[in-house]
Structure formats: C-alpha cells, structure tokens
Image (tube, rainbow, N blue to C red; front, side, top):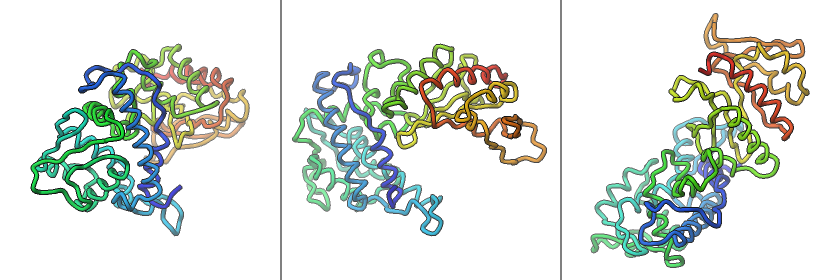
Length: 367
C-alpha cells in the first residue's frame, strides 16, 4: 500500500487493466478515418501509454498535480474517512476524464484534434474532482512527456493569440483516432473508461457471453480464474442470470431468472468481487436454517465461511434476522447482512457451492 489515496486508487486501476487480444471486431460506429486494424493498433498503443502513465502517477502523483492526501490515519493505521481523502482517491480518474473531454469537444482532423480555447476552458471546469489551472498545466506537461503533442503550450500556458490548439501523438498516428472513437462511447461507469476496456468498442458477438462475466474473469490468473469460469458456467447452466452490477467491472452479481426484470429492491443471491485481483465470492444465506444440516456435513474449510454472525442489532426486536446452528454453535444474521464470504476454494468446491446456492434460491425473497 502507498501513502496517498490517489496512489492506491491509481494502483487499483493499473491492476484492473487486462491485455488486449491480437484481434477483436470493432464496432464500425467507433471508426473515424481509420480501418479496424488501424484502430486496434492505436487502441493497443493507448492502452500501453495509459498503463505507463499510471505507473508514473503511482510513483510521483505530485508531478501530475494530484492532491496528495494520506490514505491512512497515522495514529491508528486505519483508513481515513473524510472529504479530502475521497477527493485524492477520485483524482485518479482525472487523466482519462481529461482525455475523454478533449476528444468530445475537439474536431478530429486526420490524426489530430483541433480544440477551441473557449470550449476547452468551459469544459475543464466541469471535470470532477475539480481541476485547477495549475493542475491542468501539470497534467498536460506530463502528457507531453509521454508522447502527446499540445501545439501552443509552453509548459505554463497556451498561446492566447490563437483561437484553438492542436493535440497529436506523433509516435503512432492511429492513437488519436482510436482515443477519439473510444471517447465517443461514454461508459456508464468511469472505472471502465479509466482502465481502457476494449469491450466498450467491440462488437459484442465476438466476446464470450455474458460480457460482464467475461470481463470480470480477465482480472484473475491460475486457479482463481479457473474457479470463476467453472463457477460462472455452472450458475448459468442452473438458470441464474449474471448482471453488470453497480460496481462493474470490479463486481458481478447473480440473480434467479424469476427476479428478472430487476428493480432496486430485488436482492442478489451471489456477488463476486475483484479486490486487488483476489477473488471473493459472497453468497446470501437468508434461508440457511433450512439447509444448515447439509452445511454441517461439509469440510471445516467450507463450513468456516458460514460460522459468522453479521447481525448489527440495528433495530430492537428486529423481525428480519434469522438464526442457524453449525457444530453446535448458533449464529445470527439479517436479510441485509453480508452473507458468507468465500476466499479459499478449489475447483472441486464448485459443485458444493452450487448445491448451497440452489437451496438458498428456493427462498421466496428471490422471486
């Protein structure tokens, strides 16, 4: 872990950039003046350049103009929860938000962007978290160091005698058109934009379905990846639906087919998280009292996930909690509880967890 929130958040983005395949079919609506192969070449160059810039931000966030606020309380060693820390962490998105902004206000002419000053200054103020003029100049200076060209910029300001300025990338003529096309597809969530997910501009039919599960699987290697792929396949075979969740692409959720279409009141039955490229599976267990006998027969490694109480006693005489017993010990949770957290698994465990999930799915809450 690093000292500042902006460093740790940028490292998280860096960890979630997965490689681009040699070929994928590009949706024609994102091709501007270049063909498919040229787009892939430019997009791969963009991916490599963004990755290098993120590494530089992690090492030296101050030279990028990012607010450097401690991520942890020095006295307790725990996360700090305040507005300045949050703004520091969120500033990790500034790089890609800035590149997206200049594409959306710029006029693509060949392999260069022409950007009107008046529009630029107006939209610069809209970037969140807020970017000061000094910080924007530091950001542009670093972009120049990584190969971008900003005609009329002298390191401190732009030449005000011109009505516009030009942005280019001389080392690869395809990068700017690819960035322009990528920016035209505004992802619902900024995380996806920030980690250069190629599925944002690909023809979906060329990506294994469901797309969200495929994207999520790319964060893992070895046994974790094998487990998730098999786990996902079995859930889909049993009729569960994988959903692009609120934390996507770092989170995917599964629901019963009876819950579709979803609304905000329908609870997930399984949630999978990528936490620093470590797979965590959360399984709801509101009906565990009806299958605790089965859980009692399982190996202690699996049973331990269900031997935990999450009830927060937030309401006196709460009718939403439920109890279950494992190895003679009683545990308590509520329908808003955290469920069973699974971080230690083998491929052989998939069958066991699918059996438990199917039993849980019988609860009327999942209809």
